Image (cartoon, rainbow, N blue to C red; front, side, top):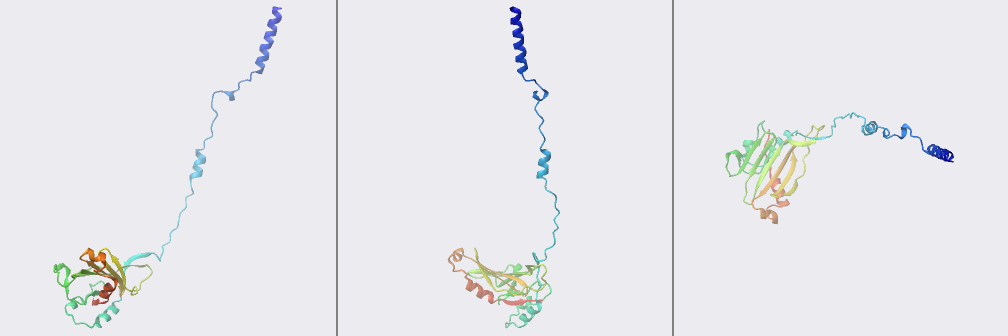
Length: 217
């Protein structure tokens, strides 16, 4: 009886062992190999190198020295209806960069430090002048530097007066003989700027229209 019991128990043990899954190397504790994505990511982010061919644009605006119409300036100077020997001191000379436009008043030299009359200072690319007044000072700038198309070699056309109000009064810009001019009105009292009693567009344009050509090559 005891022998039969031992045989039966052995049979149960063998049957249970048959139902236990066998352990293979794939079921071990070693983690599965992960495929690297570094190469894939690099290929996705790297763009092909493109060489861009840049051609010069002949229509790009640039700062250049103006072409001055000195013949027209000399004709206008000769036709002036005024007799002011003092102003004639700036009437000629190859060192003048642009035709000089000034009010009809005696001319001094700005570096002299005098506050009387019109103070003038020639510059390498033009000039500036200051005429002191009771309500405002008038500052006149002329230059041969302008913004122009690189393929244009002819004088810039004359332009109409353009008035703009400023924090100090007002200014008028225009072009003549190919040169650029800016006339500024610098008010002495800021309150007169705010209430509009210092200078308005009509008065500013009237003053600029009085400018005479007072120097040329």
